[in-house]
Image (cartoon, rainbow, N blue to C red; front, side):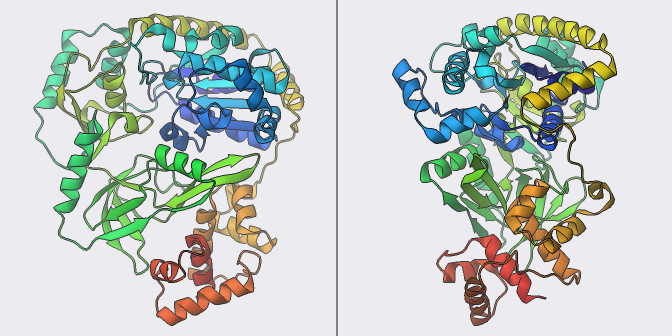
Length: 546
C-alpha cells in the first residue's frame, strides 16, 4: 500500500494498524495525519509505547496518557477509581483520535486494560469507547519488555481489544530509507526468517572493513555504550562546557520526562566531541539522529556543530513536555544533543544513520539485529563488529502474523479503489463532523510564501505572546525565542511588549546582565538563583540588543 492510500483510509475514521518495514514511511504518514487532524479541529492524543519513541512524534507515553502507569493488572475497583479523576475523565471524553506509536513494544494485557478504561470513561461499549485508534509500528522490531518467557500472546495483536476493534491494516510497501537493493534484500530475508548463505557472506564482508573510529557504534547493553562515550570524551584535551537541564511542572511528570527522554540532566561538551541530535528541528536544519562534531562555542555558550552532511548549525535549547487538556503539565529544557560515539540498539529505534559500527555479539531478544541493521541507508555504511545466533532471529509467530497483515492490507487497497473521489470526500467530511471538527481546514497560504522568521514577526505584530505564537505555529517556545533573536540580529524593529515578561522582571534581569558585564545566560541564571528560565533570559537579552 502507498502512503496516499493509507492517509485516505485513516481519514475515514476507522481504527487502523499502520505498518510496514523499517523505512517505509510510517512516521511520515502519522505526521501527515496529525496535521490533518489539527487543520480540521479534531481533538487527538499522540502517544507511544516508550518515551524514546514518543519524542520522535512529539507525544507522550501511552502509560502516562491513559492513567494506567506501570500497573500490569487492573481490577474493577481500580477502573472505578480512575473514572473519578476529573482530569483523566476529560482527557478520554475529549479525545476523538488516539494514536499509539511503536505498538510492537506494547503488551497485549495493557491494550486490554486501555480498552476497559476507555469504555468506562466514555460510557460507550464500542471498542475503545468509540475513539478512532491508530496503531503504528512493526512487530519485527523490538518486542514488549517482560519478566516472563517471550511468547506470542504478549504482542498487542493477540489482545482481545485488538480482535474486538478489528483494525484496518495499512501495510506500507514502498521503501524510503534504504538506498541499495543489497540491504533491502537482507532485511526482507530477516523478516521472512529464511536467511541464505549470501546474507552471511555480505555481513561477513562488512566485518573486514577498516575501523574508522568516526561512525556511531550501536551496542546492545548500556554498560558498553557508557564506557565508550566516557572514554572518548575524556581523551579530548579541550575546555569542557556543561549544560544543566531546566524543568518545571509536577515532580512525578518531570521525572517521567527525564526517564524517557534522551536528553541528559547534565550534558558535557567539548570541541571535537561527537554528538547526535535527539529532536527534529522545526526549521529542518537537522533531524533526530543527525550526527556531527562540536566545532566551537559562541560567546553565550551556544555550541556550534558540524553535521556529517556538511551543514554547520547553532544548537539552542529545546523543550520536551507533557500536555494534558491543552495545558503544559511538565516541561524539561535542555540542548537536544547527546554524546554519540556509541548508543544502544533500543535507543536507535526510529533513527536513520548514514553509517554505523554495530556489535550484536550480545544480542538477547528478537528484533535487535533487524532494528540495528535497518537504521542504515546502505550496506556500504555498515561495519559489523560481531554477532551471535540470536542477532538475526525473528519470532515465528510474528512472521506468520505479518503475512496475514500483508494480505489484509491488499484487501483494504482493493476496497478503497472501488470508491469514487466524490464519495470519499463525503465520507471524510462525515467523520470530521462526527468528531466536532470543521470541514474547511485552516490554511495559512503565507506559510508557503514567507520564510519562518517573517511569519513569527507577523505574529508578534498581532500582539500575541510567545506561548500563543508557538501554539499557533506548532513550534516550541524556545524556537520562537530563537526567531526573535535572529530578527533583532538582522535589524528588524520589533515591538516586544507582548512577548516580554512584566516590566519589573525585565528590569531585574537587565540590571543583572549589566552588573555582571556579560551577555552569557548561565552566569545570570545562576546569579538570579534560577528564578527565571533560560528563554525568558534570552528574551530580555534580545531586547537589550535593540
